[in-house]
Image 1 (cartoon, rainbow, N blue to C red):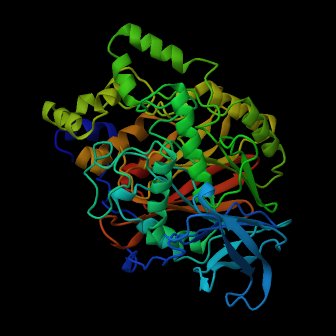
Image 2 (cartoon, one colour):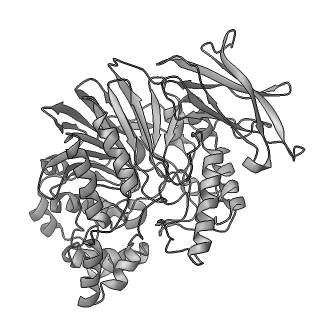
Image 3 (spheres, rainbow, N blue to C red):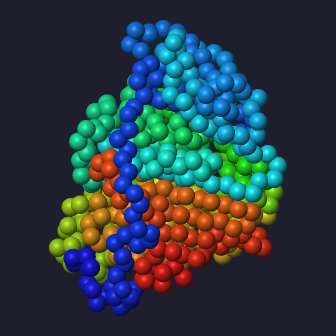
Amino acid sequence: MARGLTRRGLMALIGGAPVAACAGLPHGAALSSARPTAPPPFAHGVASGDAEARRVVIWTRLTLPEVTGAAEVAWEISEDPAFTRLSASGRAATGPGCDWTVKVDANGLAPGTAYFYRFRYGDTLSPTGRTKTLPEGKAQHLRLAAVSCAHLAHGYFNVYDHIARRSDLDAVIHLGDYLYSQKAGGFAGAPDEIAGRVHRPAQEAATLADYRTRHAQYKEDPALQALHAAHPVYAIWDDHEFANDASRDGAPGHDGDAESWRARQAAALKAWHEWMPVREAEGDPARRYMTARFGDLATICFLETRASARDASIGFGAMAAQAADADGIAALRAVLADEARQKLGPDQLALLEQGFRSSGDGWLILANPTLMARVKTPDVRPYLSPDALAELKARWPEAEGFLAAAEHGLPLLLDSWDGYAAERERLYAALANAGRHDALVLTGDTHSWWVNTLSSADGSLMGVELAVSSVSAPSALGPRLIGSRSRDLALLVTRDNPAVRYVSGETHGYLDLELGREEGIARFLAVDSIAGPDYRVFEEARFRLSRKEGQLTTGGPRGLGLRQRWLFR
């Protein structure tokens, strides 16, 4: 039991035995992400993404000090790793205008087929990558990995390394925070960086050169290179690709006016499109509105919730300032209830509804950067001694805002969909208009594991949310920020919120999602360490998914402690 959290009070509320430290399957074999990196001129590896049935984007970067102008590379795609017979090939130009990145939208491929690809500069070959096109027509099985929130300076990318070792995945979904724009130093109250993993540049990324440098540093990581070489990736951004708590018109930490923010956002978007294996957006680069169809089995709609339409976010810092008096609370509640607040915008909502209507009777998956379920902040104050309260404030800079939210019954995360309740209802209405009440929402951002039931304001069930923990960024519900009381806080969040069935912020990992025609399995796979390249993997929890009579349910939990199982309901 955490120091300062009264045992009798919590046990009376929760009951049951302590949660196991590492519930779930035993740890697997010892592994290491200490792989060799690709040498120049392909020092940033290769990648593929945005696969469709007959096309896929392949990517690399030409890294040669002597090349300062335009250059050209050859590319090849084959079903054979020896490239004895080519399925597609060509040449691609690059230069300083795109930071010497190379991107090819290869067409004329066969559906549902695994391919190998590589690049050539002069007599030098790149590493070989593997990708896969989407199936057409009838499909029986789909297996995805979902990841989010990879902070290079706060841990090794062992999660990526494990995904790269797998050969049974159809694709990887990156739900945002692919990189972090923050300056070198501590992040959100967590310890300083791990030795040898200090962000470049040292300052907060704000210019095109800054964002390019940060992307290049992340692509130098051997585990990230391995993941990209092994699987096609579908990616959407969240806030840290721009700045913390970014929105359409600014960010709390941005030092400048609206015009300078627009220039900064444009620089971040340009660097992101250059350095990611994604298809170029037509028109406005902020409008990354995308749908992927895995035959008739599943439709994945990717939500853009930051750059194109989002109104300003409300963080714990702003919450603490506004919650100082009754007028501030009333003003805050008025903002939260504002029908005009946007997160998607009408254009994207209209396109999403079209995607929902055309999804047939297969799985409908929403790739969603921030938490969608309604989650009220639990009031932890009765369970914290004065010493424990002081310790919490010392460890977590945003604790004052968290405590203010708890005192007034406000949502836990106003940067999430709870800060845009009217827009969430509009999204649910679009689902209902399309006859869908069984959405499977995959979520990043919180650095924690969640299983949530989604319902509209009138109580209509809309689906299930599975949120993935982080690759390496510290969790506000985890021990790196709030110490040994993280488990108790997670239990209180679950107890006080009917929508929340499971939450844990104690480990880093990825979601392994396996889907058949009507049934599925969601596995929360965790690594036991990110402090160095050596690690083991274990299954923290597992849940069964079932689609029946137009609704989606989850049950059959495995790996939960007694109190977690009781609260799973």
